[in-house]
Image (cartoon, rainbow, N blue to C red; front, side):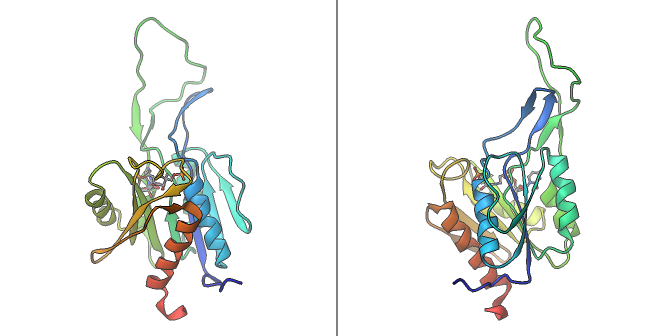
Length: 222
Ligand code: PMT
């Protein structure tokens, strides 16, 4: 069997997209399938962690031994994360959270009208940034989906959001990032730590990512 390296630890994972409502039948979202985040939750539970998975709307089954909490919007995800954060040891934010939401949600289905239309958007809360400002002993790990200058933006996010690691995927690469069964990432950490992984099935990558974090953050427990 596997050594339960994370026994006694609590791992909080977010996964999937958020939905930001426009009216009762329409919303803004993105292509996140939840696969990467669910793979991380599954790997954490396999390693013996108490694992909480805060998930946007996806159609995946909850991994064995994982407590799943469904949310819809960025705001609901923030509230759910806040409730689970303080006693967590590792927080891994794989979710693709909407950066904007419609400024007002129409109570009735919007009707077609003559000519063009537009929707005014406002910023959502940045959950990762909030956690970065609140954290004490938690190891905070964000993901970054970038299309250009991956390393530059990832290092910038690490600093700005006070995260311990940013796991960057170049989402322009086919078979990496959103929806695919595989992913290719580079992990950035403090003091210029940088490690690239080859293209791997998301399950296998998830196990390797957790092993890396454990090796660096819990050197005495191995
Ligand atoms: O779900 P899959 O189909 O398997 O795809 C996986 C993935 C591509 C979604 C995943 O690997 C990934 O990259 N997730 C982060 C996507 C993203 O939204 O990145 P970002 O650069 O917009 O955000 C950076 C970090 O801040 C993320 O950890 C995000 O969870 C967090 N964030 C962003 C906005 C916001 N309002 N609050 C946040 O906490």
